[in-house]
Length: 361
Image 1: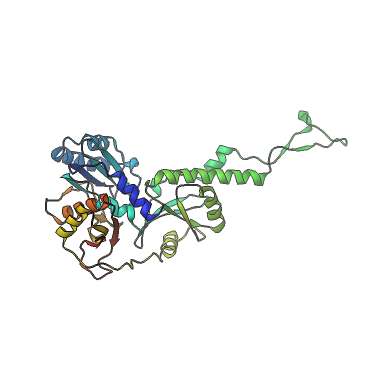
Image 2: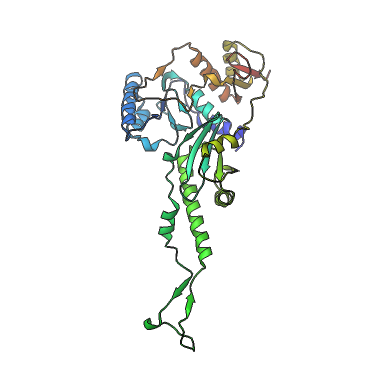
């Protein structure tokens, strides 16, 4: 899926929402104690929604039944305007927040959806596949999200047998003319059975990966022994992912191998247009004048992988007229009128973190 088609998918997903939408972002607890921290956090969020948006039935119902195991990554976003509703998963952990009486608060979800700095990596090995999330040089083990079998469990399920079955003469086995017992070769050879077990294992892992990752994930990096990576990639070649193979043997220092493999991420080299005041951009977005809107990553309201969100998180509320609400309205209007959205790192550009745009006229 190209960046343009991905943005178009996002645009269509929010085209029917009104400017009276309730938006809620909930991060997954950084520390898990048998799901207890999530249950506390969930209650706090439900209380906040009931206080600020008691008519948001979709959001309340989803939260009441949402369990820790239902997180596909590090957070969820919920939207409800009374007629249209949607829930989405985020790779990154969002800042906990709630907005009401506004267009959908899309900026955190859109930043996560379009991120080029977030990469899912599967370390494929027969012993125990592992799943990692790489973000801006940081690597986090996410294997607890991966419900993948161990190789020996697949092997036991298939009951791999030798390719030769010996039948003792005393049990009525066939004998040759000289009285020796005959070995019957039944079915396939041991090597072929092993290959079938390998494929069954890879298919189970592939299914587990598909279930674990958010639907918007387009690229999957695979790292491990060259032969294993190659065989696994063959099994996954018809999946929804664009596969990128990396070769690194052994289980030691996997996270270092991942950092090294992804060290050459594309730098943000786009030139920024001249700065226009936000009110002008909002008017231009409303009229369809914006061709591309440039949004600073510093305003994405996403936490880094090292953030330690606890169960006592308080949902942020953004006042009318705040920078967050103004920027979100501009982005939502621009998106609805067909503009492209580009995220930039203001620090790397030595620029002020503000909205900028290329205009159509």
